[in-house]
Length: 221
Image (cartoon, rainbow, N blue to C red; front, side):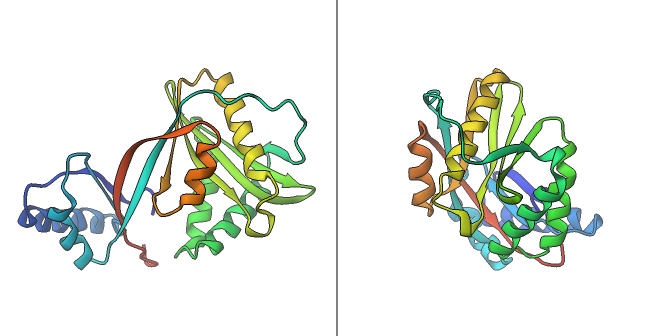
C-alpha cells in the first residue's frame, strides 16, 4: 500500500478533484490495485479536495517533516543491544515487521511484510534489526538518495519500549549516515504523536515543514 499512492496533488476546484479521483481510480484499477494514499502539494488548499476524498473513504493524516539540525554528540558507551544488518537477519526482520503490522492493525499485513522483506534488496536502503539476545525487538532503516538520508523506519516492539532501544537504533543510524557522507537527515512523524516529536527533538531534529496526506485502508488491495 505504501507504493499505491498519488503524490504532489494539486487541483483548482472540487470538480477537478472529482475528475482526478475518477482518473486515478481508473489508472489503478488497470493494475488490479487500489490507490490508498493521496499526498497534497505544498500549496494545495485542503478544503478544495478534502470533501471528495472523505466521500471516497480516505482519512486525513497530518505529518511533520523534521530535519537533523546538527550531529548529536556520539555516545562512546557500548550499547546493551545488538544492531545488526537486516539483509543478514531476514528471519528476525520478518518477525519484527510482522509484530509491527499486527500492533498497527494494518490490513493485508502478510502482503506488507513480504514487501518489507523484498525491499531489503534495494541498494539505497540500509535496514537494521535490534536484537535482545535472540529476540528481535526493533527495526530502523535509512533510505539514501544522493546526500539526503531519510529515516523511514524506527520501531520498537511494545513490550520492549522505554529500555533505550530506540536511542541505540537512532545513534546507529547517525553513525551510518556520517559514514555515507549524508548531508541532510530527515524523518516524518504524525502530528498527533507528540511523544515521537519530543523524542526526535532530544536528538537535534527540528520541524522543517508539514505534510498533509489522506489514507485509505483497503484490505483488498
